[in-house]
Length: 151
Image (tube, rainbow, N blue to C red; front, side):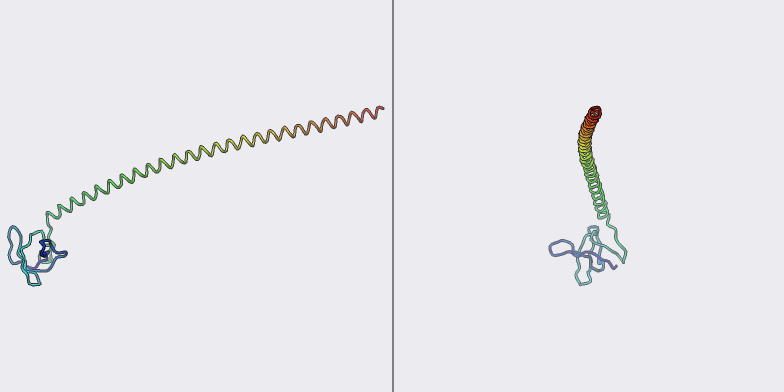
């Protein structure tokens, strides 16, 4: 029976990628595979990837993948929670600084309005004083004219 399986390296680990081979004998502990390059090895069932071109699903590997996926989902959820927390903190800080800017702007506008009001009042007093002086001057001139006319 044709198959693809990982090859056992001299250090006992599996090869990086699977190789083509044929099943020579199968046992409960594993399978003897004659690889295409002429070597027969006894390997565990979990190292077999395909049999007659059909993918072999390893229950332990799929359980490991499920655990890995669950861990990835948990990590993603934690990252999303951290991101959400940072976004809320950023929004809070932004609102706080904008409030301070608005408060400062209002205070500046209020101070400016008070200065403008004081300047206008000062200008009105000066104009009123000028009008009063002009009116007094006209009255004096008028009184002098009346005195001179009567004399």
